[in-house]
Image (cartoon, rainbow, N blue to C red; front, side, top):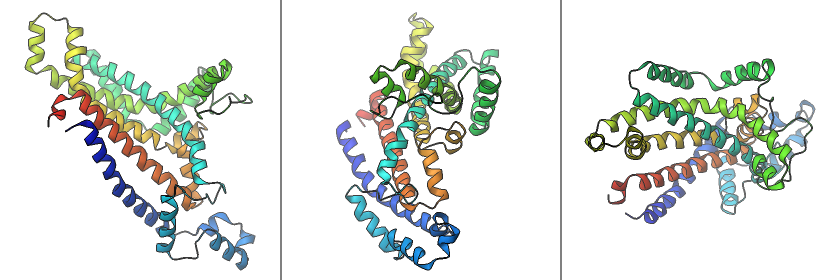
Amino acid sequence: MSILRYILRRMLLTIPLLLGITLIAFAISHAVPADPVAANLSQSAMSDPTIVAAFRAEWGLDRPVHEQYLTYMGNLLQGNLGRSIKSRRPVLDDLRQYLPATIELATAATLVGTSIGLLFGIISAVRRNSLLDFGVRTLSLVGVSLPVFWLALIALQVLYARLGWFPGPGRLEVGMEPPPRLTGLLTVDSLAAGDWNALRSAVSHLMLPSLVLGSFTAGLVTRVTRSALLEVLGLEYIRTAYAKGLVERVVILRHALRNALIPVITVIGFSYGNLLAGTVLTETIFAWPGIGWYAYRASTSLDFPAIMGVSMLIALIFIITNLIVDILYFVLDPRLRVA
């Protein structure tokens, strides 16, 4: 099967998948035993039936749920995600505003976690059952076991408040003007604008939250890399490579690691998708205005258009991430190209 045919088939399958997601998300959000009117109007406004009726009519809450869903789907097919009840702005504009911050943080955290995890996993597999292997496995277990929000609080208290090694919450120093918005990624925008002070500030503020979020990814990648590499190292072609006189570094990096990367890529893709979906508590602790914070605000105010917009975005993120992972399978494993 050609890779283009495979990609086309997967893209066609996403259409019914997205439709099913909209139906489930709409049903769950409207099944919550709470009133969006009470969540968005003041007590004095709630006591006025005219204001309540006008609010329900404005947001379509006075119509049956199935009519609301059909109206939403009609707007969605036209590329309209609706207007947020909380911000009074188009949901698409809100997502464009908050998504870049999450992309920047998730990408940095994934790069940090993957780099550490691959290095530790290789060391642990090569030095199997040694003291170094025991130490690496202990660190990886700690990384996947500690709650990320708790680690974020400890990191802020120790590394920022007491030792001062990292700057505090936020994406830039207090009072610093952000660079002109080009992509929404402060590191990219400041680099494009030649604003080196903003670039240094953006990178330094990115380091601590990316280390915290990357700790879980690092633990997972370490454990999977070690397991997969140990399995590959026991195969006959690896023993043949050693018998030919190849040095250990070449055997590990050129022959063994490539075949061991397939399950590792799955873990990395899954972790990156989770980070892109938004980490509510971590973004709140680090005052990081991303999708997680936006989703939390939408859920607490029963902002149905925003909830649906975030649900669609998260679903699309996981679909694209899984598609990229499958494409990488084709690149790394020639058996799939002839299957």
